[in-house]
Image (tube, rainbow, N blue to C red; front, side):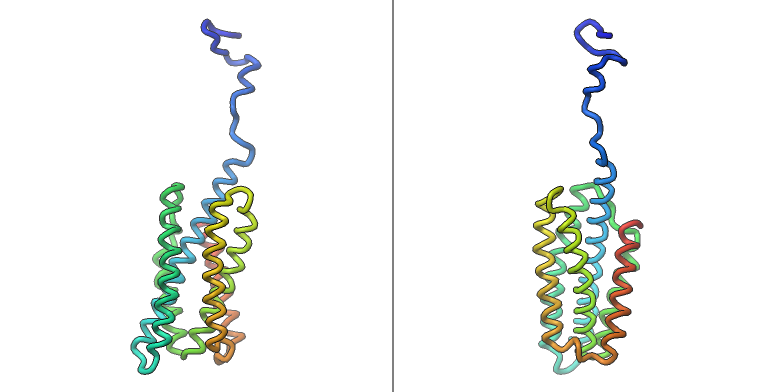
Length: 200
């Protein structure tokens, strides 16, 4: 059972003590890839939503203050996006194949809601950030023991999303025309995009 030099042959009991793949390791790696892929997609979309809103507001007389707010929030999301781009590279995860579509759709959503007025733009922000905040909360709970460093980063990003949501509410998101319908449609779209981005 043992070759000269002490090298075990197949069938030697010591072979069973070789380090096997950890149970669930492949599944854990696949799940982490889903998390990083969907989060990168979400931050990409957020950047372009704010970019679309700011483009409209910059062109509207008297909307400079709101345009500046939107550009500041876009900057926060760009920081998040840059970090997720780094994480995808570090961990060998491909981005979603839907990125070009999400980029265009997000800009259109941002510009479209801004064209409906200040309140609609803020309602869009509240709707999107509410979904993202809940999404991050679930991931933080899932990762807090398995990958505490990543969970801590997500917690920081979640705090930024909460701040954006709260500012939108303060600025009158709930006063938007057809607020319940607008919010429901945007949130349904966000949840669908999350599911698609995890897998594709």
